[in-house]
Amino acid sequence: MAFYRDRQLTHLASSVSLFAITIGFVVGQSATQISLAAPNIGNGVGASTVSALFTALKSKFAFTYTANGSGAGLKAFFTQTPPAGTPRPLTFAASDDPVAGTEKVTGGRGYVQVPVVSVGITLAFNNTSGLPAGLKLSRASYCGILNGSIKNWNDRSISADNGRQIALNLPIKVVRRADSSGSTFVLSSHLNAACKTPGVPAANVWKGGVGTTVNWTSTFLSATGGGKVGDVIASTKGAIGYVDNATRLTKKLPAALLLNKAGKYIAVSPASITAAIKDGTVVTYGTNKQLTRIDNLTDPKSAGAYPISGATYFLYYSDLDFKGFITAAKGLAPSLGYGSVP
Image (tube, rainbow, N blue to C red):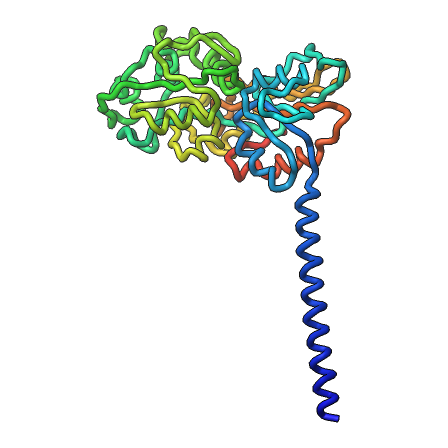
């Protein structure tokens, strides 16, 4: 009897082990199946400002994204012609510059535009140049730097901004976008407003225009894409350039505190970007009111607002469902350095 009972127990233990292995295999298989079954939303193009966000979203959704700049991305979206290396179907685009509303998709397909996150366009600088981590730039200073009239870090305007603690004899090397860029649109829109205000010397008044491409000083360095601009800043002593906050954080670059319209030096953060966006006005437009943009963002007035802020817009064809993707993007945004939108 004892022998029989021992054999029963041995058989039971083996059965339990086999059951556990089987369950483990099924659970493992289900996890794999769930991973493989991540919603496929197609392929997107456009703004480099949301590269960090879209990289994070790839853990939840199946898609590719080509950060070829807002201008090229919108062109590809409306003509339904993906750039080289981007697979079909092309289903969405991202832009920091809202569409006019008169654009048509080749073939007549309808589309939607919605602001998904807000971005701060930072003035990031090289951290091996001897500049303080808390570098402050007044409007006179950053307008002069970007207009090309302030050429050295020992300029008295920059020194005055920082309690006359900067006496660094080092040429300023401005790095700007070479491609058609929504970041350039957000920056130039701000410069066109802020660099014509009292306290900005005539030599520092912005003259480059407004758009995704503008007239830059010929001696400035240039790179295609926000990530490449960040790389040039990181590798060039004395460099300063404009990149969105998420890219700046990825590249581990310091950013200047900028004097805003309320007279406060503000550091870029999700909170200060969101404060700027709250000063804007939400507008719906287009033939069927299917487009949304946020106006009046060129020079936000709130005391806590980061001055160079804008919304990043997500465009997709109206016969597709991107609600889950947009919800997930909004949830991830603050942890990556983006602000929220209304």
